[in-house]
Length: 379
Image (cartoon, rainbow, N blue to C red; front, side):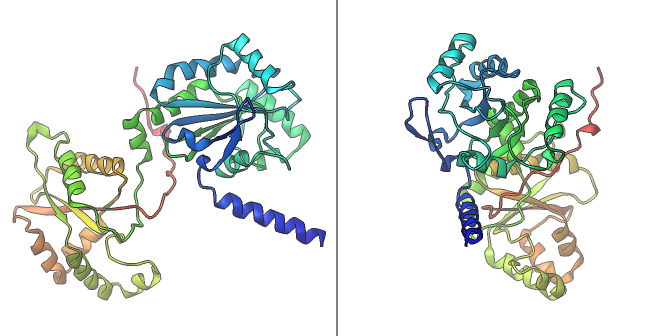
């Protein structure tokens, strides 16, 4: 019976956590014991950190305050949660802790009531944070990272396989829309955190970093006015000698998309059958932006710049895009698709280069890893 109750409680915890999709779903207590909904921080970039006043990392308060002073005007907040679970290095009441921090580090960012971040009494906020971003390891090439790894591994040889908080001053970076972006261990450099923060605080940079290729769309056409804005952003992209060698065709005709998809289904029945969510051959997007370049070559670079502008504009408007090449090859190779190309009214001296699927996203894919080792700075 006891085992059943424990399993039931665990299941309830998982269900509760799954219903909470962002930090805004949680309520915490401030340093006066009053309930504060984190929804109050919607639209701000957050750095959530568990702190201690008698830790070797306590001087990080000074660096954190410097970050806060530098970026708070841009919508950046640090949410400080003192925790006494690591070496009992955060003794005293929250009032005593706050007095210590203001007297020694002159902090101005909000401090909340003391909490636990691991174990049976951990705050639900931290259950969520750890589920979103697990432990990524210490940098053992760094002296402090090696020290932490050695210390924790002596206590538990498999400590690194668990997502729990390892020590004071672990940090979580949260986007303006409540997504947990990254976790930092106490040995990570504040300069690295600042670099990531800048990507979020700066709206242009955050838009670039948030863009993903979307392959699932809601069954909702994009408003014509929005498509006009997106295309206007595209044609204002750089163009060599201002030649503007591209032409653009925006498909809003749902029947045209459906009709050419029927051709695709006839030619690829097995592939369509494998995709239970298949609606059309353009990743189910309700609208298309078709980009054409000169048939005799050239214009590809300008067309690429045009497309990137349009994808970033779409991202900023809550829309998703995916640059498609496969459907282009199918359209050009299949005579039955001539009616589609005829409707695009492409001049004889132009060819279809790529298609942007565009619509309202029905997914939020994670970023794929990027290989920074391919970058070399010549100084």
